[in-house]
Length: 181
View 1 (cartoon, rainbow, N blue to C red):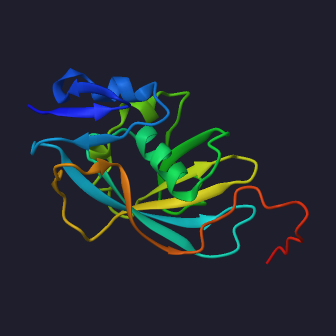
View 2: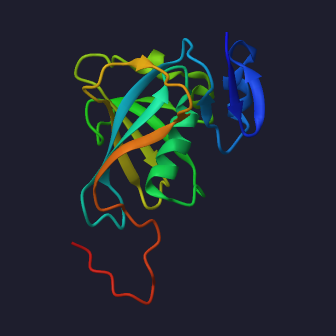
């Protein structure tokens, strides 16, 4: 057993971090001693969005017992969006497949489903994150080639470890001319 700092509160890992995180906007874990937290690295790749002009991707390290809601907040932080719209995750063959397994707030699965339950994905399936049904920001979530590892002492999770491309802009400046490509 070890303690983690969570929004300035110290909690024992066994005391229900996931339940606490469910109601918090910012759910970061800082490990203060070596412990059993397993950290996985996920690659988040922009697939499309109303104002998406350039390719973008990032690698995010998270505790594998984090929920999909924590992953949502991590992606929002990585792209610097306002987190002001509904979202869901879905498993399907492609981002446009009609057959999908949905994880959203209506079925409660975004708060119940842990990353360790999602990966490895079933064969020929991908995990996708849809934010804002109007602007339709879609990201593909895939495990990186990095092996899961123990949490490192003093490191705050989740965290972005690498980023490539140009970060998408959720709301372009209306005074600047926008070219749809």
